[in-house]
Length: 332
Ligand code: SF4
Image (tube, rainbow, N blue to C red; front, top):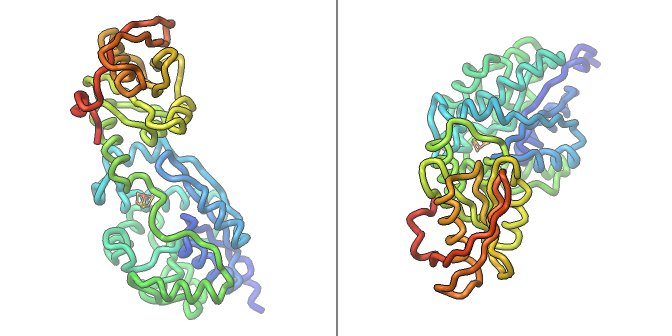
């Protein structure tokens, strides 16, 4: 037995998908001690990675990276993909952060489940090279599933990894991974797509609106973008109107009474209207009318609306504005 191989340890980026799982299994099979890290922001969660860790028994660290991620997201070097997804700079940042953990905790190298040619933008040979160079850990990033199609990494050159036992998968077909999953006895894994809100058209539009109108934003404002209808009323004010009971509950979770205004029609079923960071008196009245328009209140009838601002509560009487008349406010 080669004792030096037993000491090798690798830190992988884990998205929780099948490719992440397989990359860890392939390395583990050759005696390497593997661990994962997964990063969380309001745009993607650690849920799938936690499930993958349970399925495979590979230990997982979860790190919230929202502040540093936002800095990159507002001005990514390589720009965005189809929506607000800065995939290349996102990968480079994640490998940079993982690399720092690698150094701090004494891992020998980094790895991920990326497969050459699987995604048109972020997994071409050029993109993989870009990520390696920008990460600050060039040579230390191993992609076990495509390794035989890529240049030898430092851990391979130094004999820490047996290149012969790595894979040569490339392209968009999932067949080789499904075959490998059977070999490793992995039965439950999520579908490859989804999981990142930056690739979602509606979310991306709301995020772009936020970036266009604010220089700074709290994490809760990024969570709020997931729920309800969003209406921009002026340059400094927008409102969020619940569409369903679930929306109303989710919106309330991120309501900050010290900063936001909450508007609710009295005695008549209707949505929660949240105005993050408050607004002027006139805009609050407009928001109250919009809330009435989405409620079950009778048309052209003044109704009472409770407006709770950071400074106090007041009741205003307004007539509803029908939703079809405020379409131009909708961020969509
Ligand atoms: S889809 Fe989202 S999480 Fe994945 S690389 Fe792109 S920006 Fe990052």
